[in-house]
Image (cartoon, rainbow, N blue to C red; front, side):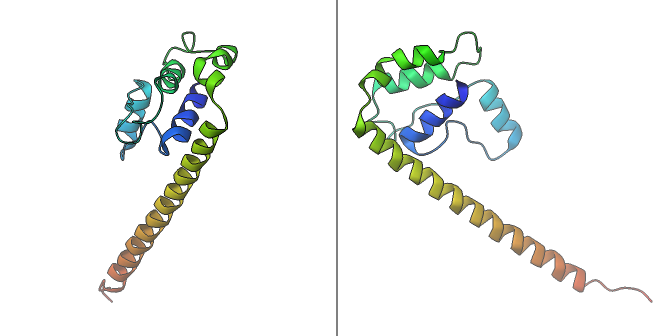
Length: 127
């Protein structure tokens, strides 16, 4: 159910609830369930949707909503085609940003390799 909360968060705003550049900080954020609903991305999202996410992203799994409880949640009951269309748009946005990030990381890695190779070429080897 935790993963469902993360996916729902991404579907509603287009980015994940937990993000840090450094892995230790990211793990700390996840382990403490530190996330928020930043403006302007969450301004038009209902209180019911935010509450559902809050009820899913609970550290203690025994206190998290069950699948059956999620199906009975007011946000799920009132969600219609309009909510699904918005979620599809946000998912497309998320996928594009992930592709862009991977491409940027590839360029950075290639440049670092080029610099390292240039450095090796410039080394003088004693006979």
